[in-house]
Image 1 (cartoon, rainbow, N blue to C red):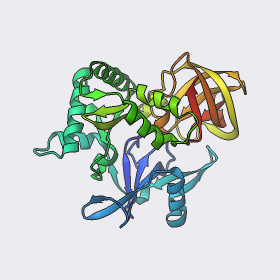
Image 2: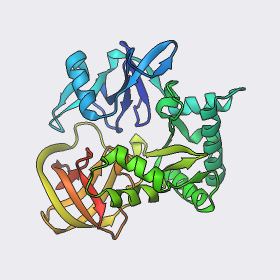
Image 3: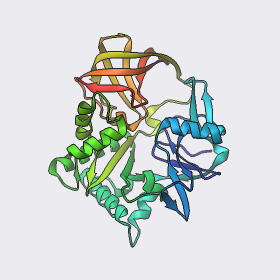
Image 4: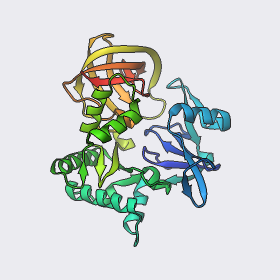
Length: 329
């Protein structure tokens, strides 16, 4: 299949399962993608008179596939993990964010959520100098599975465009135009959803959620923007790098570089001050870990590490779950 799969796109399988594409690097015969929606009479999302159930936790997604569609689980010999992925032969449809943007922009009559999405996209495009079509609509709205309280999910491809959009949203927030940062109530809600209300670092995590530029409110509705580099900009091919799961570590470190903290996947360069000294990077494919720390900040980190074998060999944190800790001190 010639299509270059990118984060922010969705895939529908021949059985009607819907997966979200993860990352930019994929095996030669399938795309790494994680289950998001399943056809189910228990579902509350409706499309073409068919109900869909949204599955949130990674554990639930894995269990469902193991019990019902194990062909969408595979052992990846390079990361040495079982991943979710859809073979090309099982793909029925690919959902492209930019195509949805043009569809909504050209509609004569829009739903309320579509009007809010258009207002957000137009405001960011005007501020950044980009075209409206440079911002792709993703998430449930892309799939036609939006609900009454669905987020406005947007994806932007390309490093330069991503940085321009980031600065544009920051300026809009500073002026209080169209978009606003989370207040106390909204930050508490998103923190509880992402990290659990009983998290011992709840207050610190709340402050983090409030300062993140890529999420907030547009006309009272949650927005989330995902910035994704192009495959040509990361210069990595599947199988060129080997990953070896290592130990779980807890360290105190200083953030040396946060240049790629706004992208998905996100990366931070660190210097360990207390704990295992050979860990030098934090990496995550999860959007919740973007903008998690800034250059110069002292941070507490706890999570699984892996050895990366490329031109250099080094150890990094791979942040994946709500159990993982990554907070400024």
